[in-house]
Length: 462
Image 1 (cartoon, helix red, strand yellow):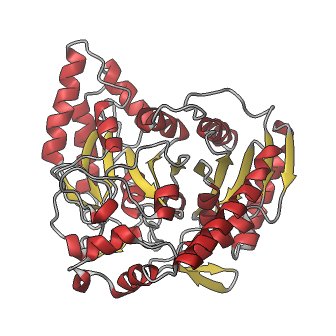
Image 2: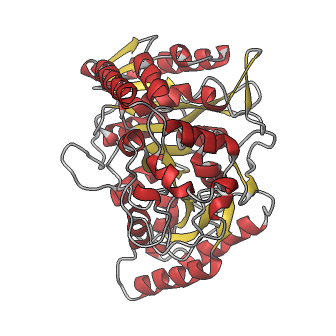
C-alpha cells in the first residue's frame, strides 16, 4: 500500500498487521524528503539510523512481538529537543555542530512505542520567532502553500509533516509554537496541559545545559511553568495516540477517549479580537462555526473578551522573567548569537526582583480570573491567529493593517498563560486559500476532552 500521506494511526496499523513494513514506510518517507531538497525542514537527516530502527520494528513483528502503537511511524524532532547522536543546535550558530549525548524522555517514549526517528528539524534561534529561519539551516519553506511561511517556532516540524516526510512531529510551545505553524501548513497539533509531558531534554536546560551529560528541566520561572512539548500530526486521532505514549500518568489528566461530546458539552467562543487585530473573515469564520455547532452542543455562549487578562499578564511577565538558562548557555558565545536575541536575554537578566514578583502575582490573579470560564463552559473555541499564515518575511495583513512577530500570536499567548490544553485544528480557508485554524481549549488537566471535541469537530466539518 502507498502510505506516505496516511496519518500515523493508519501507518502504524499497516505495519502492525503486515500490510506494510516499517522499511517500506521509511522508503516512502525518504523519497518525499529527496523530492524536496529546498524545503529546509531539517537541520540533519538520519536515514541510516532510521533504517536500523525500522528493520528492528519489522523483526519484532515477524517474531510475534508487539511492535508498539506507533510501529514504523516516521518521527521528526524539533531542534531544541535532545536526541543522542544527533545535532542539537537550537537553531543557533553558537551551537552549530553540537551533538547531544542524551535523548529527551519524550523522544525515548515515542521510540519505545515503535516510532522511527528520521532527523532533527529547523527552528529559529532558541525557538524565538513566528517564522522559521536559522543560521544552521536557512529558511524553512511551506510545501503546501508557496509564498506563505511555515510558521514558527516549530516550523521545520510543521513543514516535514505537511510534506509527508514525517507522519508525526515532536515540537515545543511557549507562546504558540505548535499551534501557529500547524495553522500555517494546515495540520493538527496539541499543546498539552503543562507538566503532562516530561520536559527533560529541552535546551537550554537548567544551568545552560545543551545536550552533554544528564540535564535538569528548564529553570526560568515562566518557561518552566508554561513551555511544553507536544505532537504535530495529520489527524486528531494521531494526537491522542501520541499523548497516550508521551504523558506521565497523574491524577486529573485523562488521555483516553471519554465519549463526552458533543451533546452534553457547554461551549464558549470568541473571535479573539480582544487579544489582537483580527481579520473580518476570521471573525466571520468563527461566528459561522459557532452557529453550525450550536444545535449539536448543550449550550453555546459568546464571550468577547475571553482570556484578555491573561494575555496582558503574559506580555507583561515574559520580558521580565530572567532567562537564566539562556544566559548561561550563551556565556562565552555571545558573538555568535543574533544581536536581537542576545539583547532580549541580557535585558531579562536586569529585572528588579520587586518588579518581577509583582508581575508574577498579577499573572496568577489574571489566570485565576480567566480560568473561571470553565465553571460554565467545558470547551472554548478561539482562532489560532487574527489571520492565516503570514508571508515569508513575517508580515501578516489584517484588512490593510500589517502586523508581525509576536503581535501575530496574541490569541495563542493568552491560552499559554491560562495553562489549558489546546488542539489546533484547521477548519476553513482564507480569501487567499490559506488554512484558518481554531483552538479547541479545555480546562487544565482535561486534555482528553479537548481531543474528544476536536476529533468530533474534525469529522463534523468534513
